[in-house]
Image (cartoon, rainbow, N blue to C red; front, side, top):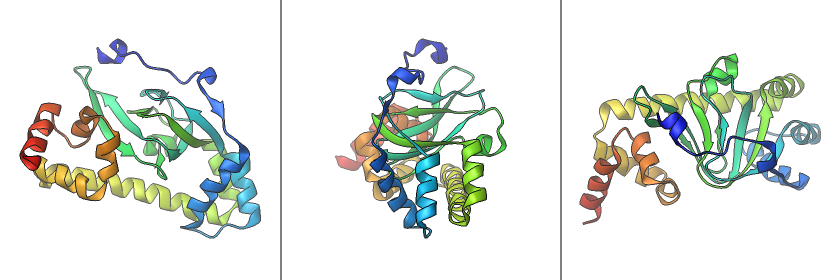
Length: 213
């Protein structure tokens, strides 16, 4: 199976390099675009969010295990994927810079995840544990409101993808991605894009040739 056949870096501590504390300023600036943060909120953010640099192809959380962290990407690209019954990878979510990623329902309910979390590229991220997120929400009304925004957006994204898979043709799905998220196409391998769009890589290659011919 592909689960065992692929060579991956499995989130050992020696792979990580701690980032300077002032990196938190970037995170708080992004959050401040959605909710107002007090000085106390900013200090809580610095306390609970851990900044890390992670190399490409690192699997941070594995399916069948309970996800411990919510991740924010300051640079790089990450994805959620699972192995189907044939051992093939199926990408269900792709996350760009300034986005949050985790197997959201499993993270919220602390149940076994059905997806893996992987860094597609080298990434600079922030992570927060489930327990620390609960503390942050209890201690800050702003972060309570922001957490609702994060999870509502995640659920909306999942629903939109399901609707697109059901109602749009393969070519329409690709053209929509080109229009709405062109940087994904430039930074992510074609096999991941194809899987996310619900098609085989060879089908996506054919569609791309037709569009650009």
